[in-house]
Image 1: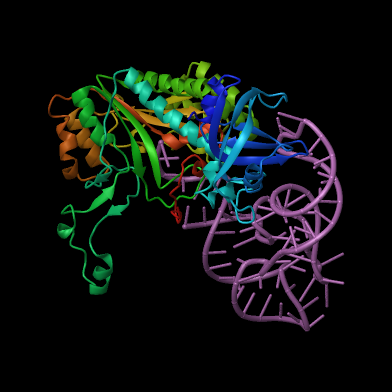
Image 2 (image 1 turned 120 degrees about the vertical axis):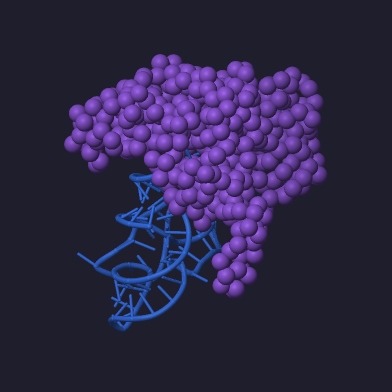
Length: 462
RNA sequence: UCCCCUGUAGCUCAGCAGGCAGAGCAAGUGGCUGUUAACCACUGGGUCCGUGGUUCAAAUCCGCGCGGGGGAGCCA
């Protein structure tokens, strides 16, 4: 049996077809009954048309039970559609109800619903246009990520999800334990982590970077793409407690190579979206974010501008009074600053580099000036930062100094430091939040709508 | 974590100078039409988030709690 996507694309007029899917709408007229059947294989469904006069008893009974949401099997002949809404349609001979859908209790109606409401029915929302399209695009973008790296010889490395080192330094972590916490609390005794599963405290990973660097210094070009976890108490449209991150890492690569890879990557992904997600993208452009396609097109075609942090601050200082947070050299760039740089100063994507070392992580390579590090943030209009990365510090002594200067204990970093002891080499990488990418590419503003089952503060119902 | 907004029918919302609970959509019934966010008519549908208070009287005003949304910070 072909799915509806294939029927619409490939089936020839006159052929006998059986389609299975769910009723999106049913429209009854005196002469004909129309059912739009959608099986999720594509944005568009298949219009099934029944002659209202010659209906068999079985078909009439089945049709009366074919409410919005019901699962059906419909058989008939594919014909050219006499009406303008679609090229082809199914002239139906028979219909059977596979799964009923009571109209009085089914939450999804033949009308628009708010995204807030749909979040409360996460188990049913993939049946809607918006969430269905987002899910298909999520799949396509994941495929594009692997395709991009595979084409360029990057190896996919599965970095661990559970980590016993709390040194990743990218935010609050979720602890993983199989100690009996209830019993511990009752006993009033402190937890003895030597008796915990791993013999020490363990957490869910906040980043695969430190691990993937080990493989970069062995296989050369690698990337990781998997779930990461942050226990931050942040309630915004751009944060999740569980999200997917893409982190390439490649050896014998310095900051300019890293910037070039990031630019090529973004353009590849946007190009993929436009080539392979036409129907879904058209829907988002029409109903969710007008101008979306034009924006993707623009980013894809524009050369990314480059600007040092120092120059960026100079630009910001010219408009100092218009910001809530006054910019100065040494300040962290605020959301408003990033948006201003990409949207007003450059009018397109811009990569800001060479940030003060105090603002960035310990592993970034120190510049000759001793004050800045070889960091890069890729800023795009409407969203701000979409990629953050750097050339890594590959000199043992300097890295050790950086760790100490940040007030960190070098001990747990012993294996990370050893990478710099044994055959160290310059290497670079960046991180891209997969859901942030999807937010950009779908135009959906709330990150909870681009992941099937969002995990956020006080949110893990489904 | 901080700031702002918000909670009324299945959904989206109006009603809030305190005085009978409303509309559109959805659903049901009927009509009409190759319909396609169908159209027309009628019908059914309410713990006004919970709790305490003010008052003759609270959906409306006040306190507390819970839920939702937006912004900030943190970040991806």
